[in-house]
Image (cartoon, rainbow, N blue to C red; front, side, top):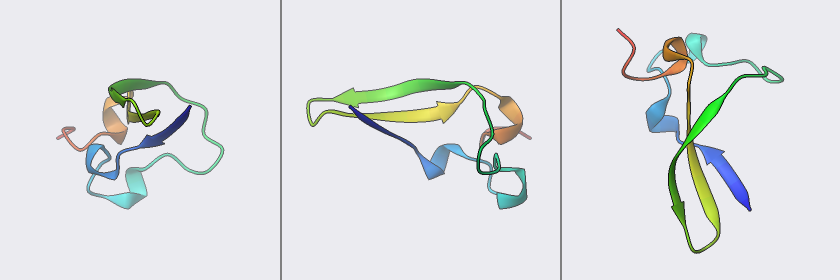
Length: 51
């Protein structure tokens, strides 16, 4: 099953995105029959909803 981090779930400031190779946790926000899963970072500082 393939998964991807939804760019709309990431911080608007790309400097706050996790760097390549960062090990962190993600949560599944959508899963469908293709099969494909959509992820968002658990770490609040990586997310768009972080102030």
